[in-house]
Image (cartoon, rainbow, N blue to C red):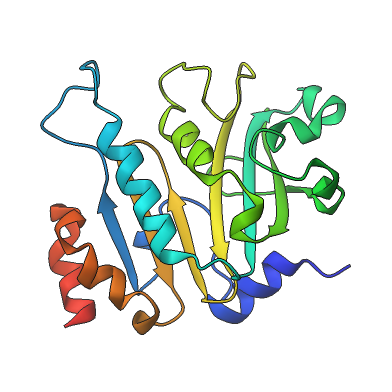
Length: 216
């Protein structure tokens, strides 16, 4: 069966490698600041703004009937066995219809940044709609990934997870990379102009000049 994800990347994004940081390898794109830089990560409520902004951006970028590819890159030691034993655990908490997990695709991939020595990447891809996933819980877990919290994506020692939510219908990619920020890139700048205009105050100031130049 053809790799739907790779076909999409080849057609809409000139075959870019799906890896951080998408904003710096593709234009047009927007980098949003989602946590409150005035708060220390140790302060209560530090992640409140991150949850709210991440969820608002996802809600705006994905319509109910859009075709979505929910992609997870799990970066682990090569000799880790849990991928073979319980591969669906990565998705069970975030998929509403458990019987639909038969559609889950798993493959080994090579990412230039991560695949070397004893480290390897397993890529899961799940075709769905917005209504099929518990996205508030998913986005919260991504924000918690660096905090040793039970809600984080994976609790497996020596592993890290990267989540990409791909809107096939609107040809955009949403990557909440951690509690600090979110990249959204698109095949055409007009596809995300509304995000630039509606959430302009959330744009990361460090990259604002570059982003303004794209949309003005």
